[in-house]
Amino acid sequence: MAMTGVLRPGHAQIRVLDLEESVAWYTNVMGLVPMGRDVQGRAYFKTRQERDHHSIILRQADRAGMDFFGFKVLDNATLNHLEKKLVAHGVRTERIPAGDLLETGERVRFNLPTGHAIELYAEKKDVGNGMGYVNPDVDVLEGKGIAPTRMDHCLIYGPDIDANRELFEKVLDFTLVERVKLEDGTTDLATWLTCSAKAHDIAMVRHNEPDKMHHVSFRLDTWEQVLRAADIMSKNRTSIDFGPTRHGITQGTTIYFFDPSGNRLETFCGGYDHYPDMHPITWTWDEVGAGIYYHARKLNDTFLTVVT
Amino acid sequence: MAAYTIVIEDTGESYRCVEYRSVLEGMEALGKKGIPVGCRQGGCGVCKVRVTAGSYTKRVMSREHVSAEEEAAGCVLSCRIKPITDLRLAVIGPMRKNVCWMAEPAGVSSVLST
Ligand code: FES
Ligand SMILES: [Fe+2]
Image (cartoon, rainbow over all chains, first blue to last red; front, side, top):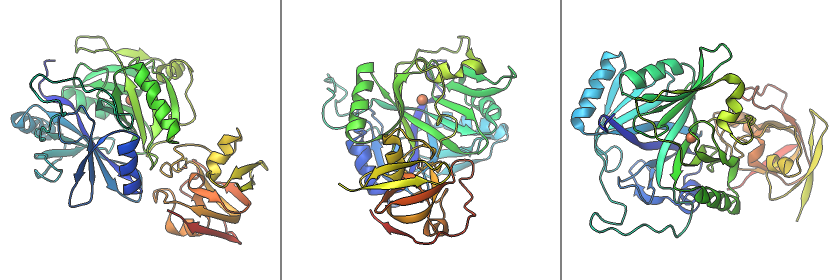
């Protein structure tokens, strides 16, 4: 599709058990840029190259996990249009007033059939990436932390991922990119969907508990940077789940690791471009190991069980 | 540096854990098994154990997986405790992570560290 409608993942609000510890870690190890705090005490971050005010919000809580995941849409007319489509699809929506999140316009919030809160919004302050809009220099990767390019996608776990897919495809114009089938050959264990020409903007795995987060992912530009990220993680005693390796699904290179509250994050590089005319790719249940970890060709203990 | 002996009662397996490592990472560091490993950061709950003897320091852990009462009774996430004496523990783990029905242990003490 031409880039109208839903543009891209815009923000994720993540629950943390110790806010100050997490702020220090997201700043120094992840290399995100602190963008202030609001009256509720939530801490805001963006990557260096993101132009909008923030993409990660941390909220102090007594349990880990993700409060909501937001997508930016083209403009306010699109926001109103998509809200009407959601309501017509039988989805209850709620308007969160402008300014509830710092420098962010009104948001339309709804729950997916899997229980996850998703938001759409059209406006967030363009603070720029520091390079300016006239004759910009390259942002040379220097300074502390992993410093990813952008917050890229998320993987969520919940029961009815079929109804999720229908909502994303029919209402929000996402496209199916890849899927894993169970042994029956018909039921999806997992699906990867895009609203753009990326290999995925959101993915979901069938799971018995609703509203679970598997990971929020950050993009890196090269495999070398993935290796550099792993070095930074080890040097800082960050808990690594798996990798560096490659996914068969999307073919991106990856590290799964955990933030200081046990929320899984990913640093991700590559992945092919997908256009809506392209045939989706199917993985059969017996090759799911290679789909997730292309080199190991088997799942690890944590992939299907460890979520927040 | 001090190290302590950790005994996993379910399997009889034991290992030495240095004072600066969590009980879970101490097990992993020596290639030992018995306690399920997840996030290692107190968020996912799979590493839940019941400490039956010994003392430890602890850090904040997810209330989704450990209630205040459980925590006080020695049902804790093993990635969030560090030994200050030898420890004995029973695995609760991912299948039973929301249940800690066993009798309260005697002689267990914990200290909150930040
Ligand atoms: S391994 Fe996740 S809570 Fe301990
Ligand atoms: Fe991912």
